[in-house]
Image 1 (cartoon, one colour):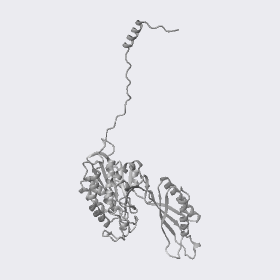
Image 2 (image 1 turned 45 degrees about the horizontal axis):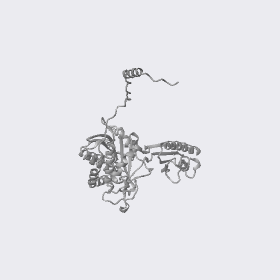
Image 3 (image 1 turned 120 degrees about the vertical axis):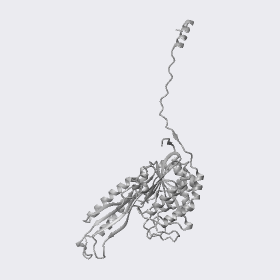
Image 4 (image 1 turned 90 degrees about the vertical axis):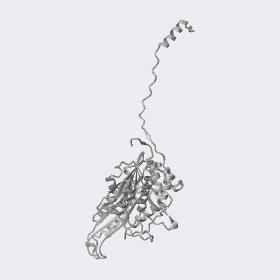
Length: 448
């Protein structure tokens, strides 16, 4: 049935009814989380950092050579620590000395808000007799800076000088750590990065990230290397002691010769690396010393062997230690004797570069060094106790090229002939100064 049209009176009443009806309440917007106020400092003044670092070059060379001529072993760096503390105080930087026996902790507070970065340099030398015929040859018999720590300390002090000259513009705070005993403290003593942390490094003041570098004779001077994830391996030192029974060498059946047991142990340990663990995960097991016996015709009463294992993966590290213990006890038992496996001295986990921090640091490196001179490098099986610092807070550790074939500077670390191209020193200052500035200038709470 067709609907009849409404009368005018009905339409009028309907319109009035609609006009009188209350309007629907407006939708209330959802409450938003309170916004955090952040500040972002200006970018690093690259040109002025570059100019300041280059102007420092003669002083950098002078200091590096001074440190090289007066090397000191771990936990004995009294002259080195005192000299660095004096130079830092002269820059108007807060200094705590000594820390961790002979180390230095210095704090530079910038004039702008920002985060807090730590820069670490190691300062100890090695028990190596230098063979280089150079004007700055070590003056300490049997002791040499054969790992570049003289260069590391010089560069970080150079960063302190450059940034202190720009402190009114510097965002946040920079903590400078000059660390003793990176190569390991003397037996029976504590030291190194762990003792630095125990005495306030990274927590007084609180640090948001830690940075460092290492001289690398595999890279040409002028080049900086980086890696995400592991860049150095873990390191553990072991001692295996095999028990024997001494007797005349002509009557071995009346004693128990530990030397053949040691030989079997060496043969049995190598398949742990080559056959019992995943070949895709790098690892090393090295026997470095063997000691036993006193005369050619006397069966030894014991044999001891010292060595090291290196891995890039913590699970592989733990598994390898377990397999070694089983193998040592089993081989000794098969010979009717006993052997012990002991882990001695300082040990380090793998040094892991924080992925986010590494990515964020690359633009600063490329501005400081030029994109063509910033290269990704594979991890090395050497070790660094910077790894302990990088476990506590995000860390970024880079390689500084120091090789110069034209000048004959090609020797490897920890050798009597090692040296570094001093042209790398101001580049190291620029690289670290830029990286630290960019990090501190990142977003940070105004209350930081």
